[in-house]
Image 1 (cartoon, rainbow, N blue to C red):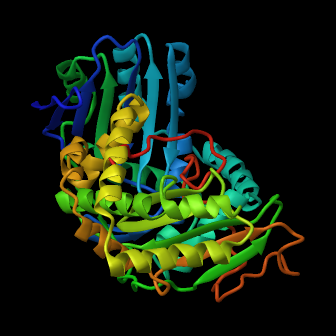
Image 2 (image 1 turned 180 degrees about the vertical axis):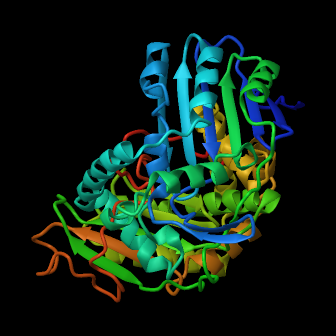
Length: 469
């Protein structure tokens, strides 16, 4: 295994790519009683069309999420979730547009739990009866999320931004699409996407990296399977499909979520740098220490729930900002005006350095969240970069890079906004979109059916966030 030391932050990373293609990352934490492991496949809700074995394969929407639900069933009748919990672990899983991750935290029996994790994720078992039962369960989940403002506001923004990329659709699929899922569908997709060459194992805790490696070699297939070629359709235009969506729902105050597409498809150091530059630009412009935020807060237009974030999934890159406000249009206008002004006049070097130091400190603090760190590690493994390289790279970001980012992406023609208003504020038809949505009747569940994203959706679990950006 390769050992990489980071003396400035007191961390050591052990990395390896096993003969079967599995990407392994371990950060030892000597003296800690708890440890976290995440076994993640580079397969999410947007991976519906792909080429494998010379064949182009189309699958119904929702297969990745359906697989996540069913993987805990074992051929001997046991449930892996219950077995891990009985052995002192706290297990769970989530599906996003780009990945499906199975993970646990434990303070005892770590290596036994790691064996159980690798074994059940690698052991598909589906029957007609169990699939039919799950279709009913997931169907209820889909209908519940259709009434969730947090899901709807995010999904509708994606539909405004993207014309055809499957990221605009629900991770969980629709009631109609999951009805087409069969055991054969699940077995096929498991074989294609759950092969070690398409997966990553991330571990953080007081563990022996070599022992983790040995267990992975012992339990996982020795063969490196073919990594499928995803087909997300033709490249998307730089501009949104629609500028605005509005809907009335049961909220106490108007909610806004705005965003813009970034250059997709970057990998390696270029991808890590894009994430870092975008994060610095958003915090500089409208983070909670920015003068713009302070002014809008003082005017009663924003509160402490306002956030900025980045979403990188399934070959897409999206910047996001939003929160509760009584005047979404003015907030968006103020942010775009400030971006134009900063891009034209140039950045305040002193404030930029303070923002960078603040971001560096946040990354250091995130190292104490083992779930966050695991998430950063497998995001880097799939993206072709080393997540902990963010510390050194972040110090090399220049004012010109940040200025160019604002000029290129935060302009009126690039940004779309989704708004949810209380019934008394909204339109007469609460389901009517304000601008050209092509399928307003489609159900919306949200990209991450078991994930609590930055826009604040209800969820089963808050997943590892990428601590490097």
